[in-house]
Length: 283
Image (cartoon, rainbow, N blue to C red; front, side, top):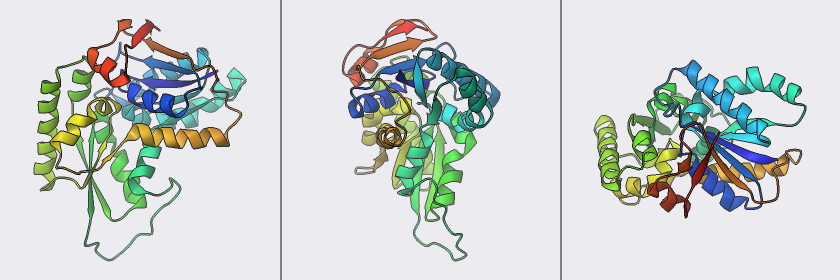
């Protein structure tokens, strides 16, 4: 058995890296749906269907838990799969399995509050707002998941999302860092113009962006805190596995990387981030 990670491409490797560091003895299998990437501009029903197919493949490969290491899939498909597909699939499979996403631990990290917490509605005006910027794919931005869920928990945080239509694609293709830096600067300036100032904090709301997190740090005002999804997800999952010993995550430290796209060695950008070459097998 193993931990499965699913993403439209290589972005979820940022979550995989954090999980491997946190749970080095666990077995991991990663599936990139590169044949259909990116997901950010796809219709919702397509995202649901593609995500379900990816989860099925990972369960077939022996995963006991699938982590949707993709904000678009987590925002659009996760709840549907958990409510309408997973119960019947789990029964047919005859073993304990689950699907989780990365948005819940990210929002917990952003608010400093547990997911179950809901703020009391205040009638008085809040004078000092914490401005939180979210850089994401168009699909995640359109879902407004960060605005909705953070507002439920913190009345003193104002969330502004900046959709970045081309950034994940550029990272996926291993684009030159200078080109990526200019793209990132443009989106940070776009968000600044829209809200009138830079955000106080920022979420990299696409796991691809973590691969070039240093470029966001360089483009944002010095000292702007970033909320890192991989670290938040790794912390949350370590606690989750303590509560759910029925999920077998293996103990051999195996690592497998599958793709629905063209198998082979990934870009130098990915190798630099991962700490060594990453080669995908055909899914």
